[in-house]
Image (tube, rainbow, N blue to C red; front, side, top):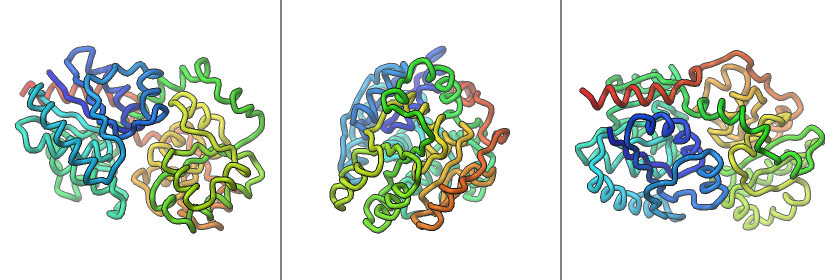
Length: 355
């Protein structure tokens, strides 16, 4: 079986780490990195520290509008599909890279498989929501991370080719949690000795609005504990544009993005995580660390239902209340499988192609 796998952003590198190990044990995989995340700490470092095979192709799309990014990726991916004639195109999550891969595959006589199918935030203002919905509706195989995701797909009339496999990020995290303690020095590097809060903010709804971003920063700065703020390059740009960068650097410990093992170590040891990232919400849940989500909705509602995550948006009172009295992290809830999702993806792909 020949699989053309398309990735382009940090969470997809982590997912590909788990699945590619399984696929390459028995099949041929062509790994394509679109270059959507091109900063070294958002891209290259993940391949290095996780031992992900070097991509056979890096499209180098870089930054740009959604339309320009997607169109550029589609042009190059179409040529690669023609060149390799894969049995299946495999894509992950909800990025522009995923949308580009799904549109190209749907126009060719090739199976399309979507890992992390069925997630819904029900907020169409988020480009990611549009990407994941469109991808699901043109996919032949839909690998769902939760039972709720399967219900979401059924509500939209999608029942064929749907499989509950669990979350491949859980597979990756189980490996990383074992190796991080001996390979990460981030706590020593930052001279962290006392209790701290870990924060990330990157979504346009929060970073493009000076009111929302200023409120979030003020709440973080008011917390008596040290706040480690892992800042995406785009977030740094917006902080500077809004005149907030100096304040952030004075009141918070602002760091550039770090590798997966370092970030996992920061999450594991944090008193609480404050984020607007879907992936970070889920990782905090897996690690039993309280999560405070700077959004009004989430595609991972199981984390909220289990009591490990609370949605606060950019409401100052809600953020401060959650920091003072964080949600109770789960200890036994496993809505995302048992850590064998990647093996199930490999098996189901092989079964589908052999028919």
